[in-house]
Image (cartoon, rainbow, N blue to C red; front, top):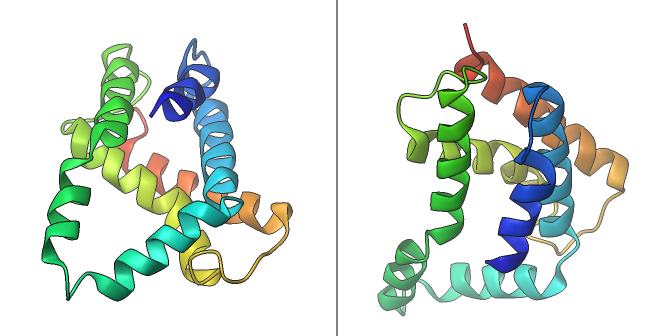
Length: 137
């Protein structure tokens, strides 16, 4: 959690250009996800064993502190008029999914490695989609 808060501070701290800041957040977040063999192994194990151990799903659902931290940051940006966010938790969930979902799917949760340029392109397209919905109007 400390590493994620540091990522938020680095990328979404003192924001003047929300699009550039979100792109940098997305790029760094997706790269960290893609380049963490430990996280990838845990995710594959959770997916494989979730049906046998439903308590695992309950534990991961409770562990939303990173999502809450992102939601708080998005709410701050909305308060400054840089985003149009009615539900910060929902927006945080969508942003996380949009910048990491395709990376996870295409890499089979880290089983297949691909270049940083491809990770960056996937994250950038996720940010573009996010801004179409949550960009300030």
